[in-house]
Image 1: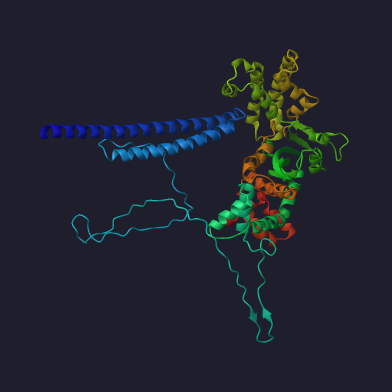
Image 2: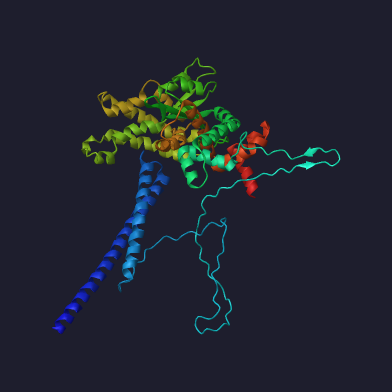
Length: 538
């Protein structure tokens, strides 16, 4: 009986060992699969980015696809780490070799970060023989990256009073200027409030809640007062940026929707932008963006925004710009240069194979004419990528030699294809979009002027932050609030276009502006501020 019991216990122990080993092997296999999936997704993401850098925008959804792949990569990396830890834990209870995940080499921590040295207490005797005759022969240093939560402080500026024993007069240094009149907030705090509201799309109520959790009670109305005061203080900088933008010979124009609080809900308002960016044709003027807000999309708004300006306007085919092109306009008509990205997008929608597959539409719904149109248009885009950044004369020479024959062939081909289709055919409508009225002349104006870009992407990039932040800040509370948002967007986007940290720039401007004369204010513009900052760092 005892022998049978011992044999049963031995079989149970063997089964448990096998189960434990199988569980450990399964955990390791799961870790290998998770790591492999993460590696595959990482490589696909790198390939997509490299293709995008080499060939430009392969599709209108390219940027969104990369963002989606990055999100998937985050999830896969997190899952791989969880499975790896599970495999390590299982390996400790079995004889199975633990799984080791191959990780990319980590870059050293930045040199400019301060180092806090924590020395572990040294032994007083040898751990082997117990002798106290030990001498230091070196050390190993393990670096750990840590962060200190935001710290608040109150700066007390003390002005001592002195009295004269001879005349009994009282002397005292003058009070320091605050960033805003009767202000109590420092320039760094004000810059943080502005940038988080308009640059990071964090409404003031959420900021107030976060500050309260950090031990500083600042009411919503108090923060709103600071935003309004900052807008008034920064008016000279905004005026200089506006003047700089409106002196451009060529502007990018676009608009986007923003919700505006109204009775019974919200209404759709508009945020307009006009961008000066001369870098594509090696112009010497620094880039800048100007924003405006309006309650609707009537043509009176762009007419008012660009009153007194004359030049080349790169925009879409929105009819609201038509008043700017009138021959009797004062000071003269603006020239229209239409965006080829808008035109290509209409063909792309008809030839998007992935979208058709997602909606389970048959292959015959994919238009071969639209595919051919995209190929022909992309050939022109390829030439533009090669000449981006060259001077206007070089760009014009290449366009006359290489782009014009392609555009002329495209025109003849589209005209002949449209003549064989019904006017209700979606492809015919996409072609008619380029041929309607005088649009073909506006589409092809880039062939005769090296300054003109093929697309209006500069304006769309300026509006990208607004589109991303709409869901965060919900709506503009009033028309004045929309105007204020446009005001601050002009400052933040202009700083970003000049590769300047907007928050650091705003903090420095708010700190220095009260002590400056009107003739010194241009030194604070983003394109003039960067050298000053570098000298201060040096």
